[in-house]
Length: 307
Image 1 (spheres, rainbow, N blue to C red):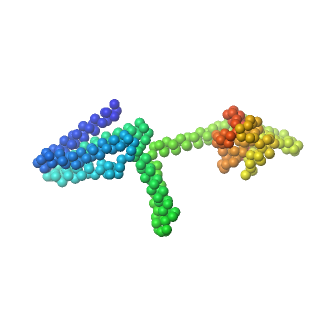
Image 2: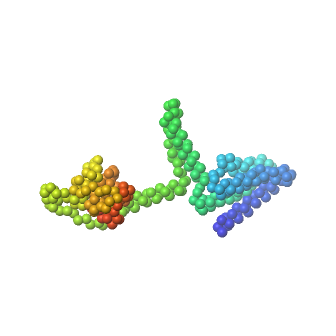
Image 3: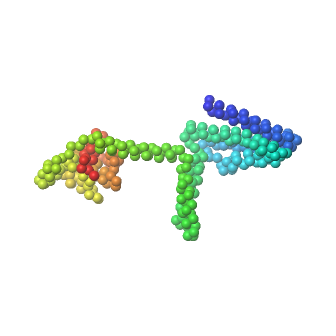
């Protein structure tokens, strides 16, 4: 209903523009046939190009450059003819503006249908065309900047590439939505880690007990004192320090083995992994544990003594 309500005024005012232009041209050329020819070459050609744009949009195809140029050139030509045939200066302005009624209506209908198709299908052929053109242009300029034998051409291409890079993704709503999703996921992970550290109570091992264990030659265990392994440590190194057997992907694991793997994964990157990142890497490496076991071990890994 909304589309029909918007389309009706466009069609009505477009028809009024065509009638007005016909009247102006009939008075100027004293011939209805000549007047119809002028309308066909101006407003009519624009209407044809607008219909062609509608069809291409319905097929999820971009509009060729010649058609896009015609949608601007035909109204301009009709306005120029109207201005040149006016007998007085006052009629010059009127006859130059009259053809725009039909031309703007045709282009407005084409734009409305295009936006409707984008809304219904989620595909914007024109945006895809612009993105592809920008990407190809940027790739060419980067190639010239890197490999062209002429130093001046390389420098010029490098500067132009930066300008083109600023246009990449402009107006791309899909790209904008995906970037928002990525940032939302990062914020979720950060908030989860922050809340976990604030509201999780981890029992710390008394220093005297830990010193007694180490002095007696015993290992404090994977859950005793969370600490960052030395740079370049392997999982076998972490397990050896914790005094546990290195787990095998796919085999059942103890709580200490789960914590050891998560500690090794957490500090294998700089900055350290978040909880979700470490658990995702845990599962990608083939280790098996329940969500409850993983998050319980993660609370041990990120205890008060962890950096």
